[in-house]
Image 1 (cartoon, rainbow, N blue to C red):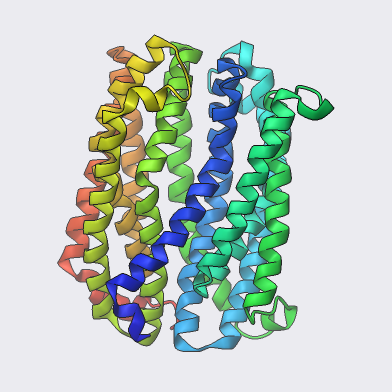
Image 2: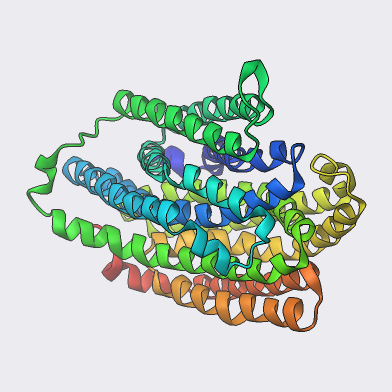
Length: 449
């Protein structure tokens, strides 16, 4: 436990998490990059399809985050029975949620996209993409679950290696199936979807093998005999509210995309490219926030509350510096970077303007990411949930409608609205955490009580 108090250890933990997240991001966005050379209209189709898929993944990821919160505290307290119990329960819950998301992707894809005002010319492609990728969401859910368990055991390098293999396979599959190499048919966006599914399936097989080899967790029903109901409630008390907040965020993003879509496929594709670059900018903020969540979970299991606060404040400085600094660099070199995706002058000019606005947005987002995870870890769930949901609709969506829809400021207006939302929420969370009120509440809110 002593090595966890060192900032250097936290930094070392964040590196493999960052690499893993980077590769996960590439698995999701490599489709857009490679399909961009096939058809810009297909890129717009993937942007819309991924918006729905992101809801599915994030809903499951929040349950996995709840698993990390509870499991790290169980491991820190040395409670092997509850450690096994939480892993069995999380796997069952993820399986159930995956079945629901699969039905949504396969049965309700067309009505969903019609409500999003998608250009009719890309509707069919978008539906096919969601049906294929979303239809295998159980694979992604189980992968995330086992990865969360391994991270809780600080088996970060192993998870990273699996991500590398999965990502490489996806790139190879895309090259073959999108372009029709080695005698395969030229499938375009359908080929990208098939490649994604195959790579994720192989990733699940590998991550399960790593789980069996490097942990002592037993996924057996015998651990559900005693206290499983209480542990399930604790898991859901963290996972469900967090999932609702993230579901609300992505649902509001779908509505915002509905405001963007009428501007045409070029603007929608530009939004997709800028979102990819923004993802790269805040990816390390997520990585180091995940690392500090694991470390703080072990601290809380040992009752070392003061160490939690020290780690959060140190991490916030690093997170904000990396997030804003990287976005600034991306903006400076925006033309050659955007040139990787497109040569369209209109898209390059619009993209550069959006990336400039995103510098401010990433300042707020870097605070949001860390503070939300930290507040949830110490049992303060209501604040980020209530503030998050309220601001996503009353600020982000409403201002997007005013700036982008009423004032016709286009994608630039929408990005300003999202920047205001992120910065406002970040300031609220920062001030609350600094008051230290969570310390008094933690005694009553701890997961292991």
